[in-house]
Image (cartoon, rainbow, N blue to C red; front, side, top):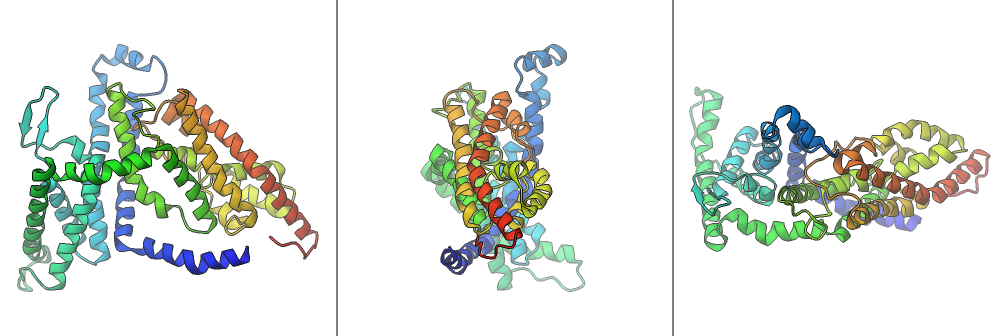
Length: 435
């Protein structure tokens, strides 16, 4: 085990760190985290329109009228259906920040570049083509990959021009804001020109650039990530990486845009009455946040509960008191580094297997028609299990979560028992114990 630990520290961790240190990766992660609160805000208003209690829509309609939803839907339309546009701005901002460029100008140019590349027509349900409009479809999650491409292109062009002093220089007497505005004219021209080129290529080949990107890249990725085997694999990797001391955001931050897009796709199918297990996506943000990481990555709620029940050693009792409550809010750093779980041979198997089992339970629950498929209704990641399951999947979601927690407790139990015995021997002065 020592040899494996040294190998991971020497070979794996440095390579993973190189990936996480890439400026594009950091800009993508930080840019997406910047707009994540908006998804929670949108979820709250969507929950108001689709509260998971039978008879709720009729009750609300009897009080506020049949069109009551129309007064609330603009709130989540302005969040979920604008994610692509907002992400184009936040990723551009963060990427410009990494180059020490004018962040505000980078964000503005990133948004402009993204809008230039979007189609400017919408086809109605009756087949009528409306010109000079932007579609919510491409402004939302379907445009995420396009936003990544245009953001990188925008900031790289801006960086190229600034580095080589390509721009209009104003006298020192000119106010700084005015000077910055003029200095962005030439880079901005090239950025818009390049956006026009990719827009033209996309229009010729596939009707629009976002449609081309969505068809070639994003749709296949969403299909793969939406499949049960993929989200089960991601769940296991979350636990495995955390055991090695590598925070799961290494993979999660890259997957979140796709997981949100899958949830939005399910929402669209639900609104059409076509959301089924054969057409919908299993791999959504709820599957990761509410089932793969109950108690934190590795489903360590099972570890926390087991410790609370069986701890006999002073060390485990003390750690249980510290980590038990935070675990119910999906905060498990005290357990990972305090118990410790990291590089602990006894914890390798349960922290990898537990999230796989939890997600598999959710998958089976959906497959047999017990728990509904997930839509855009989400719960904040720190919501305790049971409550979060109810919010995203009605009472069936809460029951499914509880079943998953019972199983992960059973998975952790023998390993925690063995670790507790080791700690008791250590406290009794048995120096021959190794762990």
